[in-house]
Length: 588
Image 1 (cartoon, helix red, strand yellow):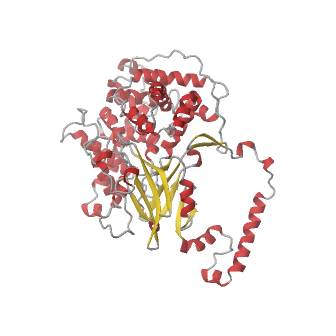
Image 2 (cartoon, one colour):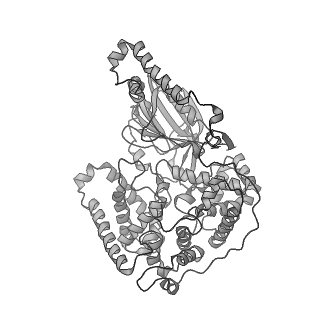
Image 3 (cartoon, rainbow, N blue to C red):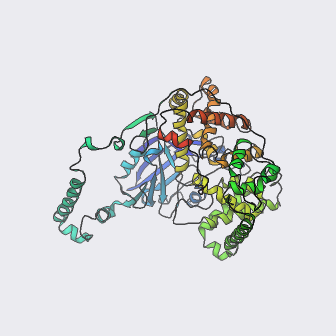
């Protein structure tokens, strides 16, 4: 063993164990180098019993949410004597260094470091999170054996090049020669070529930096790291960073909730041509009281960008026909794939298998989906597989078609729409807003967690300090909330109401974070009085499922929003959380 690092985590969405702590090692065997990761319980033993983590329990409708499941499954081998093959059993990684293609890293402003190993065959391994540091050190150590070069297409991606090719690659990338020298020419007159080349580099560096005085650098561009919490370093180098103040919140404003918008009230919002001209009142009521179920089928189409507010009845009918035709055209693409084609289409097989597994365990206790021969399960399957083809960009790492957990977001939409084509396009509208939550690099989720930490620090520094001191400032106990928009925390009906509040975006597109904040503050006393640590907090939060009072939380969240908005001298990153979106432009 030539490198050893404790405290390296893999995060899952298994309720009883969302955070698996392990150890990463680099070791040498027979002149070859390997990367090895195992959970702490099994660093010196056999592979862990994955059923303990809930993975093998196929009846568990929240068994696992992991965009890497199928990719890493393909890496499993039975020949233990062939150590040169990558092995990634459930929660166990063993790969030769020579199999690495690239390494994805977190942004510097994401707080904690994570690394994602991507192999030569395109397989993507689960993200390894370094809560207490060590990510930078392992990269520095790896550079002893391979060349790590920043990708020209992605500053957070390091291309891995074998040291035997590193010299040739570096000269080409630096472009310090008029033309890339042949290796034979370089070796023949290495001194001359190197001095000529590096003289150009020296001149370039001097021209760029030589005349700069540090006093001339604007303050907002000087890199000053302030360690608010272990694992979350905030840097003023990031545009818009400001020091967070901790003034007390003002008195609580009075907020109220309404009854759901009725069919009569909704109908009165349209003019004689069928345009929803009272859109502001519609959105206001959706936020304050939600929608009666009888109008959801039509109303959700406005909330999810299926219809624009300025369309009249004729234009809506035309658009509906066009969208229906387009849906079935996309659906037909995968329906026409023959068994022989499917055999040679690995990416399709992976997505199809994942969809099949998820459909069988999505909301099966709901009458709309119960029973083995339920036609609504077939609709769910059709929509998800069609979405794979709608979002099937093999050259774009963020376009991954389908990831476990997406079925949870589609389920209520299909329940409301009943029609396949309408449900599909409403689901597309939702994924345009939240699809980045399922990206393999997890940047979107981590950004939200970072913003939530900032919000807690701003509103309740006492509890933020507590989280810092109990290894919980990463807020991973909120991961499931953000990923599937609280669907596991509330009943099916409550979830639809909550989503209507969020989709209205009446106060802010970040209102979800204020709901998280409301729950956290509500649970603060229990957590602190019982001195809960990281594992206890996760267990406590998971046990809140179906016990939270939605209307009380929505009032609390709005109260916190107004209190924060009324503050003076607000930092820019907090100010962005309370900006109201412009509904005249498409919603991101």
